[in-house]
Amino acid sequence: MSKKSTISMRRQCDLLGISRSLIYYLPKGESEDNLQIMIELDELHLEDASAGARRMRDCLRRRDWPKISRGRVKRLMMLMGMEAVYPRKRTTIPGGPSGIYPYKLKGLKIDHPNLVWSADITYIPMARGFMYLFAIIDWHSRKVLAWELSNTLDTAFCVRTLNRAVELTGTTPEIFNTDQGCQFTSDEWIGRLKELEITISMDGKGRWLDNVVIERFWRSLKYEDVYLKSYENGWELERGIEAYIMRYNMKRPHQSLEGATPEEVYEGVVKLAA
Image (tube, rainbow, N blue to C red; front, side):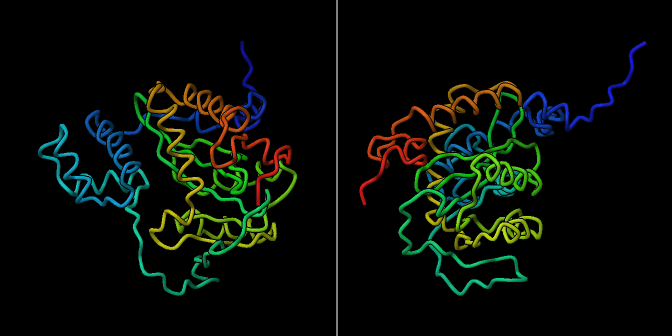
């Protein structure tokens, strides 16, 4: 007669080096048509981040979805955490209780690692279903410091990844920049940044250029790996992303880094010209 394990699921996952979200992953309850539409929406968003539900609908109608409605497109975009981004007039951004903080990077010379970290969440399609990927990147070196997959858009996996980045690097940034998503305006996220004595910076609403470093990483990841491989499940996806990020950090030369790798710049092996 087998005995029930006394090791918690969290501990088992830690020992195996896998995320709990992969163990509990279930394919999202969307139709095959909707999952295909979401893949196409993701591709269209990378091509034109300023497109809203109306333009997305028009683009999809020119493909294989001649009768798709704007309401359907809007719902799927919301499920994906996707928002049209375009230049908007910048007004004063309040801090404090609102959970929204001003953008701190305008005019800032980011010339060394750990001055600015930034983070974001993106939708990742699979052959069946999808997941969300959260990543933290060092702005100067472009190195991905920590990341995690989840099947929900909650705040907990973002805070876990932040804690892991601090543990892995042994340091904290002076400034942490994100968008104004609900995860990053939450008491849990802001409270943790304040505990670590990190200055909080947030993009202007709908301004993707304010966090352009990680937006460019999403494009590279999806076009160079995710779209090409169409991972079958969460386990394969995690292994694939892990391998890609290892190459991205350690082996892939970056034109913006004068041909060096993010790891070389982050560790100070290569110094970029001023």
